[in-house]
Length: 170
Length: 171
Length: 191
Image 1 (spheres, chains in turn green, blue, red):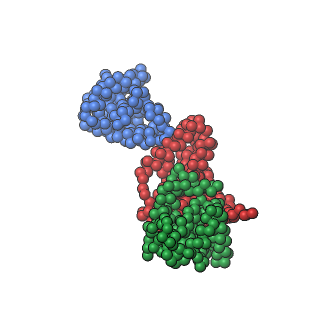
Image 2 (cartoon, one colour; image 1 turned 120 degrees about the horizontal axis):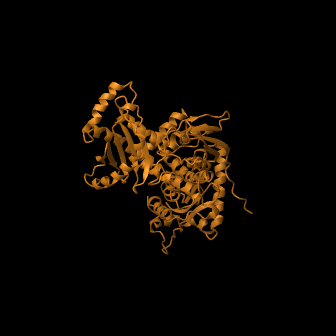
Image 3 (tube, rainbow over the protein chains, first blue to last red; image 1 turned 90 degrees about the vertical axis):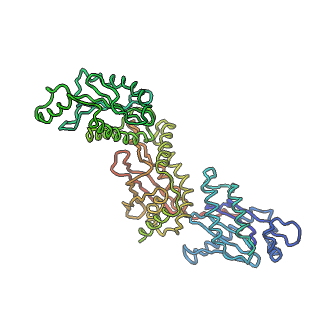
């Protein structure tokens, strides 16, 4: 599987973390992530829609937030408070969603063949976000103004989690 | 018997004082120091500090037992790890006349012991050891209070109550 | 029912998922902080209470994540359930105590926690300056923790101590009142 992007939104609807992985390139040019190139041949083209606007980072964040927020509210309206969506897919990508009781929203975009990543997002919250961000007394408790989670341990943990667990050739 | 108990800080400064009498053998727990001798207690205890400092490195024990005598007063000492000294002055009664007569029989036996009061007898040392240990326990809890600072006089009524309780129990 | 379930979760989390530290370390650390605040603010106890509450709030907004992660509990259906969670899971998890819940108001929006034991206040005797006994809420940090933690799960509450054994009261009681349920924030309108 291939991970395209990952976002965290807080309860103030602020995007506090976003990360994009360079789309694997199908041809034999640059290979920023060797692990993911195994599937690049088949998925290279599917990354295209997301890469067109990479220069407009905050636009992407707003769009992603808008869609999960609307979808989440729709699910709650239709199915009650406990109803939530886990992921949706288009013909190009799959969006995975996990929300905590504190209204932290974790969003991950992957290729369409990926299974349900709710558990993986839960792991990121539990083992990376809480351990490195929440429990770090020097990190602010909230991240207003898009200052975001600037935390190297979290960054590294996420990177290796995505590389070793999620992108492992299946 | 009458007791004068004092806690001395690391700079030889008094932190706590308490007077009481024996509760054993029908005692009523009230100190009966002669008025003219009372002020001497502090001097006697103070002069014993030198001896405490001489013996404190000797045995590695916290309970230093009987350290000094002055006339009819005997001083016992206990030293904490933090170099705070518990001093207990014991004065066997000498003025029988001031006693109430109701418990005279019990008293007379007490006086029998008094005349031969032996500060190094196990029967004397043991109750005092127990007293010190109980006070030490209360002391630790008191100095653990975040508002207590080292070498600050102890004004806690709770601590005074515990000292009085230990005195009643063992002495 | 909810009550026994909460107790079971609390017990379970405490046994299996909580790192333990020496209780005296906690007691002495907290006591030192309060004593230092009293010194720093020249025994302005109202200000010390405020500072403690503020520190607690900052702890609470973090602690809630850890609480949710370790307890794995779902959202509470009502404020009564929340109270059970606080008393039997939250306090159990972090302080190994389960303060009883009492004095519910008629509208189920206020309750009291009674602290029969309070690990923060072991050994403590308030300064006898004649004011601390009437003005200082020694364990006020707990109010802030609860306020911060509940705010993160959309419950705006007010919490304060109404009595404290350190002041000579018979019990230590904290009153918690639900002010409102915070609505989800909406994203700002784009152009």
